[in-house]
Length: 309
Image (cartoon, rainbow, N blue to C red; front, side):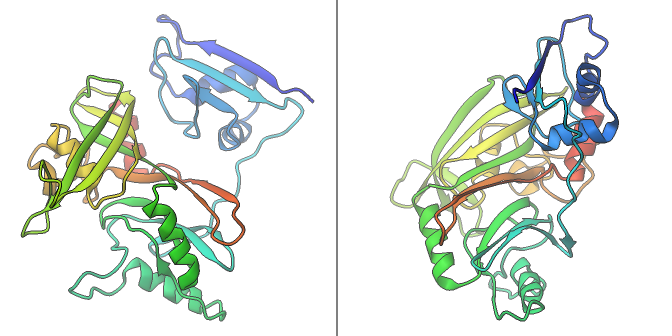
């Protein structure tokens, strides 16, 4: 059965200008709030040609909204994944585990041997299953960054996943809020990242001591003094996104390590960095199936974006 399609380009005098996109979608297709939320969750809504899951985002003159849906179906929000202390399980089978990490939690211990890291919490979670699995690290997120991570449940599966990351095969997209207004709608940062004695990262022209780092971005939304960007990593170096944006004059909110006083903002009182690993795609290490996961914006970022819109 063909899908029904509704399209709308927001004019300057529209009452929907500056309002939430879900209000417009409800006007276009009808139905209750649960139905509208289900349309977003089932990827039925596009904003300017891009699929959008966030029903709270604001729309402005010139924005193009398209809804494609089955008018005979009652869309409903999906059940939320089960959350545990510090993480939410997005997917699990006998070979791998995908989780949504909370901010302010280390992925793995540093040389100091910190307890209660994500691998510790996952180990406790897996031991309760009585299957003898453990979480083998594939990649990491900084302590103050949230989002999606995949772990192998055996060393061979983890090694196969690491090989994919080394070959730059996985799809990794982040959302970030930076201080200032980025002038270009999209761009690429490319440099070689080195590490100083204090373990801070910086760009260098010396290719012998620096690792190639490539960061692509596109602007999603601009506010008075901040910009929401989607970031796609071509390489995955430590602190890569934070360093690249800070060095170009647009530090991430909540990141004093690389942004100095600039990342402080009166509407961002949070201790975390405004960076979230939102999309993760990879090939299953055993079946070869293409896997793709998307995480919701963390509540701190949602509250900020609604306030500054």
